[in-house]
Length: 456
Ligand code: SF4
Image 1 (tube, rainbow, N blue to C red):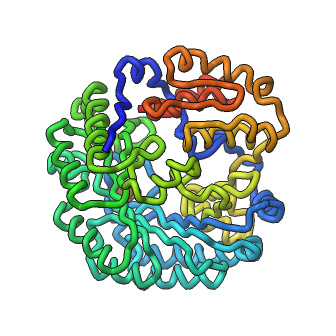
Image 2: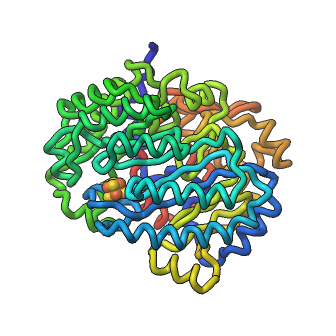
C-alpha cells in the first residue's frame, strides 16, 4: 500500500499554530447565553433535514485518568446513574414532540464512560429512546467503553440491545505510561474483548490511542502500535495529548518533566501514521485511521466525508440532538448546549425551564463559512461553482481576504486555487486546521486563538 509522507518538519514547524479542531463552525467559544429551547424547537421546525443523529452523554467514570479533559464525574456510586436516567427520561419525553417528524439514523453514547451503566440500565435507556423517537430499521448504534470495567458478557448484552459499533479507549499499553496517567489496564483483556465483540455481532471496532503522554518514547509506542494492529480494529483514532494543567486539574498530576519533548511528540505521531498506513489504514481527515474498505475511507475517496461534534462521519445531512448533561445539539441553524454540571441540568428539568443554556444562532455568513471549512476539513477540496450556486455569491469577491491569506500555503505548493476549485494536496492533510483558519471570521480576536490547542 502506498504511504503518504505527511511529515515535512520545516512545514510542520512553520504552520503548527494554535487553532480550532473545527468539529463545528463557529466553534464552542462563540456560544452565548441567548440560546434556549425555543431556538432548538424553531430550528427543528424549519430544518430541511428529516433525519436525526442522537448523542447521549453518560458523565460517570469509576476512576480518574489524569490526562482527561472530558466532562465527567468520578464516582463509585452506581445508583447515581439511576437518578441520571430518570432525568434523561424527562428530557427525552420533552424533546420527543419536537423531533417526531425525524427518523433516527444514528445513536451514539459517549462520556465519561457509557460502560458505567449496568446492562439493566442500558436496556432501560434504549427502551426510553425507542419509545420517544422513530428509529429506522438500520439505525447505527455506537458506544464508547472503558475496557477496565467490561467483561465479555457485558458486550454480549450491548449487542443484544442493538449496539453494533464499539469504541475502546486503549491510549497506551506501556505500564509506566499507564501508571503515570492512572489508567492501568490489561492488553490481553482488551484483545479478548475485541475478539468477543466480533463474535457477538459488533460490525466495527475503534481503538483510541493518545500520543504525547508521559514517559512515551518511540520504543514504547512501537509496542503499543504493534498490539493495536494485532487486534485488527476497523478504525483507530490517534489523539494528541494537550497538556493544559491550568484548565484541567487532573493534569497537574502529570509532571512537565515526564512529557516527551515536542520533537519526540512529533516523532510519535509520524511513527503512528506511518505504521498504521503500512498496515493498510488510510488517514481520515486529521486524526482518524480506517481500513481501506471501511465506509469512512470509501466516503473520503469519493469526496463524501462529513464532520460533526463526534468527529468524522459518512452522514452530514443529519441534524444532531444532544441529550444529557453538557451535550451539544446541532440542528439546522443553531448549536445549543445543555448545562455542564449535573446540578444545573437537574434543576433545569425540575423547573421545566430551558435545558439548553447556551449556544449560537448561525448567520448566513456562518453557514456559508461552515460549508467551506467542512469541505476542506473532510475532502480537501472546495468546488467553487457549487458554493456559488448554493449560496448565491461570487466566491472570489466574497472570500477575497481568505484567498489572500492562503498565499503562504500556495507558495509552499500545499494549496492550489483556480476558478473552479480550492484544493489541498494530500501531504498537507495535517495542516488542514491551519488552512481552514483562513475562512474563519472569528479568529481576528487573538484571545480566542490562544484558547485553542496547537494543531499538531
Ligand atoms: S478518560 Fe474516559 S474513563 Fe478516563 S476519566 Fe476521562 S472520561 Fe473517564
